[in-house]
Image (cartoon, rainbow, N blue to C red; front, side, top):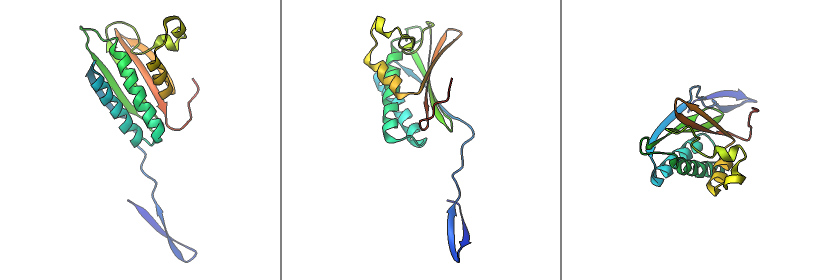
Amino acid sequence: MVSIIAPIAGKPAISLWPPAVATEPKTFRLHIDGDARLAAAAGGVARYLADAGGFESDAATRLQSAVIAACSEAFEHLSTAHPQLEVTFTCFSDRMEVALSHLGEDSPAIGLDSIAGFASHIGAAGSMRAVFAGFDRVQYETHDGEGVTRLTKYLGHVTPGI
């Protein structure tokens, strides 16, 4: 720990240097098969990163549960030709992003129908409410037959406008 000592009103005062701020995002990538135990492992990674990123305990727990639910939901979109789900965790100074991607059909890894408002027509699963409650933003895109769902949780309560 680095500190500086300066005299104040005749008494030395110790002031700690502020912690260094990471300028580069940290990224972890998992390639997992459709197994609930591996979804729990991805949730554990999310919990660790949330704790390390300064999230409150309740928020970290919700985030962990949301990642497990998102992976479980994404497993339904895996096929025998493309049996793995890629889960990418990226930590920025103000947010954490979890990207779920899979090859094959051009459909979202999780519940785009719920995002678009079609959930009432097809019956939204309870796990989808858990996923969306754990994140501040949900985005979906496709790239050359790969569907990517990006889930973003902002540090604190600030969600930037879209």
